[in-house]
Image 1 (tube, one colour):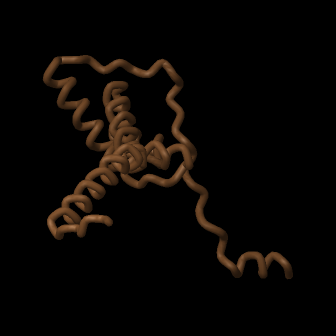
Image 2 (cartoon, helix red, strand yellow):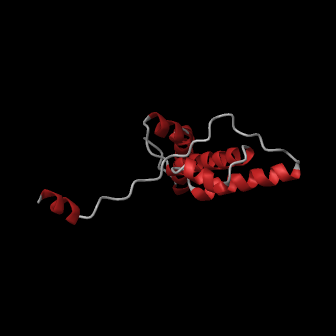
Image 3 (cartoon, one colour):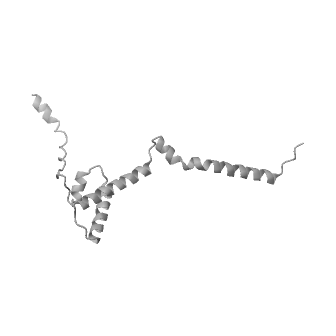
Length: 130
C-alpha cells in the first residue's frame, strides 16, 4: 500500500518541479535573439540602434572631411538628421579638443540634383490637347 501524501511533501515536490522546469527553460529563452535572427524576424530595438550608429558615423565622417552639416544632410537623405547632427557635433568637439585638422575628401564634390517639382497643374495637359 502507498503511503498517504502529506501536504508539506506535495508542495516541496511542486517547487522542485517548477525549479527544474525553469532551469531547463533558461537556455531556450536565452537564445531568443538568435532564433529571431535565424528566422529574420523584425527587431525594432536592433534596427533603431543600427540607424543611430549609422547616422552618427555619417555625421562624424562629414565633420572630419570638412563638410558642413547642411551638406551632410543633403548627401545622406535617408539618415536621421538628429543622429547625423549628434555624430557631427561629437566629432567637432573631439577635433577641437585634440587640435585635429580636417582631412578633405579626395572624391569629386558632387551634390545630388534637387528634386523635380511635383506634377504640373492638371489644367496644363487639357490645354495642350486642344
